[in-house]
Image (cartoon, rainbow, N blue to C red; front, side, top):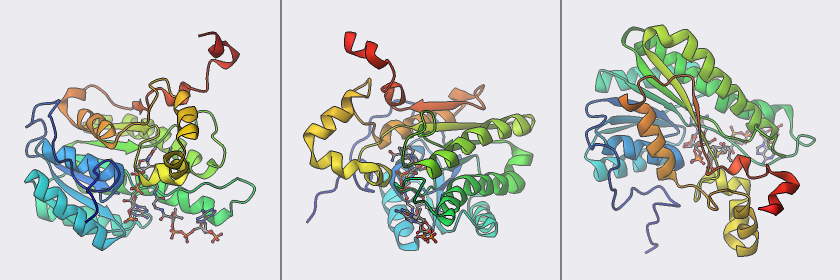
Length: 288
Ligand code: HXC
Ligand code: NAP
């Protein structure tokens, strides 16, 4: 039987050492788009390990059900799998209603659903560009708006968006995803300003390269895994010299979801080992 690898597949950690108090999020409820896989799955797991019940939503019903079973078995908290498409407002609205019926509250929304592939702008069709904008940016808006209308407007809450660092230096082959994520950074600030008076905090995590994820595989991760020389070269551009883990992103999400960050809103927390700065320094870098 194949080995379970929680750093590369959607299995829960066999052991977890709590860095925060174990009951940090006791009794709270999170709704996580894209929560059935990758970074979203690990965020669901760590929120649950800190006391949350969680609803996870995406398109693949079987995948969601399998993930929900694993998450509940590992953490002892409830996980509700909901099939939905973030591009369709009514689908998201129904998923939010189902979550509220089950848990009676939502405290935390995490927008992790996304789609991506490598493609030069000169070959990218208009529909391909639109598809990624619709999943990432419109999806983020749809979920934020649906949760706001149904619950946060009157009860307050916390939104954590997941963007990226692609747009900081204009990474090639990524005009679609970079544009979508730049808009998510902007949305984070706009909604933080408009919804702050409703006691809603809106923040964003911008992950760098995270090992073992679909996102990384799509951006050449397989090439890195197959070639130690290419990997060493790539890692030399990252100040901390390595890729990040899903757990490191999830612990940042636990922080932003909790009262530890009660005065933080409108922030984009870059969690990338300094990767986006790595290309900086220019010729002076060789003098280090
Ligand atoms: C060029 C492509 C393409 C590719 C699809 N298209 N793949 N164009 N290169 N590799 C084009 C299609 O030809 C079509 O345009 C349009 O995009 C829509 O494609 P569909 O297959 O119909 O879309 P859909 O079934 O909705 O699938 C969406 C998807 C898919 C994004 C293409 O990959 C997906 O569902 N992804 C979800 C999982 C995922 O990508 N996870 C990674 C997230 S990581 P035409 O013109 O032909 O109609 C991430 C990382 C960020 O976001 C930063 C990392 C550092
Ligand atoms: P992933 O496992 O593919 O996660 C993306 C999730 O989005 C999947 O669970 C997918 O599930 C869901 N999804 C896609 N389209 C959807 C739609 N239309 N409606 C609802 N759900 C949809 O990839 P990941 O690498 O962990 O990425 C997670 C997040 O981190 C993304 O926002 C990504 O942009 C961001 N990020 C990742 C990295 C990295 O190195 N991996 C770096 C920077 C940022 P279904 O297919 O079931 O719908």
